[in-house]
Image 1: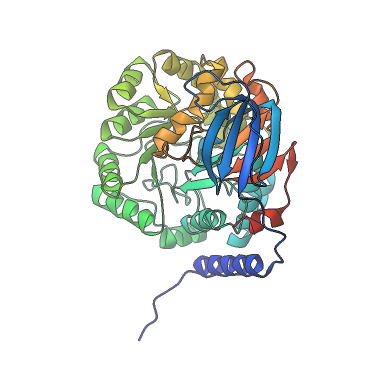
Image 2: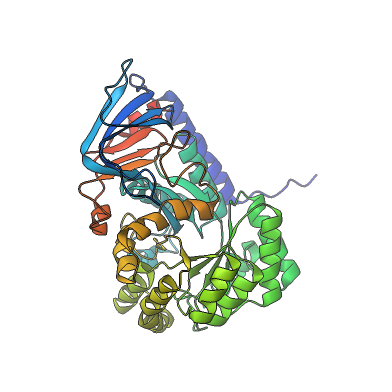
Length: 456
């Protein structure tokens, strides 16, 4: 009897997780951490849609917020006290668009891409995840990674074997052949044949696109992403306009929604943005060439706009330095020339904004640089913070768990020095990070990994 085929990458990832589980289970655990923590907050933005409170106490039990009280309440029953009485405390931040396995060093990545195995990229992803958590981002939505690797990382974090943010993942972005997301673009015949043999994310025609959605979901995808238009970093001079037909987009959205998954559409050109919105997507990523017509359609459909304002600036700088292709350079120049102005128009027109950076194009752990660009485009600091907390949580469908601080919600809590409502760049230097009741950073310093294992 012929044995079913198992990919080498699947076997490798199974071995990696087994090793991590063995290390976690055999490590000598230190004394158990207190499961009850009192946090004294000098200022507390528990509800990002309201004004901050003054001196407050957050009581955290078993990873959840048990109560919020006015003033500084003394710990009871041997509970741990965290003194943030001189700091501004707010919910953990949410980035709705990252690529966690992308190397920050683009020149090195370009030179070494054909020498790396899945294990190398997995190690890069582990480091990126931990650094991003320490930057105050307790939840991420990954919109384009190997589905086996990213679901393994997601589950390893959730099971306490690894340190990082809570991940909601899309697996591979769905793309038409030759589109943004087809990794065979402009490769030699050997690489092209190998990609075509194993790719499950490319599709052509509505039925084939339904298949692509189902395959990503079958491998563990929480959300579906597809490329409605060309992309800046595609190694092909295909432009930034629509590349997928309306019936293909509609098939993707209907299939994903049937499975209870939300859909994010990568879209730069106006025609692709409009077609994706008409197909019923939940969010548009990048949206470079939005205008009054598409802004009205956003509002009619109730969709969110995730501008990723830092990404085109990063891509342009990398292309100018020779770390990206000539095709990317031309598209990056076109994007930078229009993106800021058009995003400002969307903000002015009242389009719903959710925070996202496309980190992996730009540097990981520098996600908070997006805030100042949103403010420059017309958002108030308070609105920018809301886009990375309550509004992002709503788009994720997780507002009952994250995005604000209230009894029963996850204890995802960060703190900074000074008010980010007065100066949003304060979020670029986070001093304290707690995710699901586990403290990962205090006084700007990383907490040791064994404490995270002990908290499982």
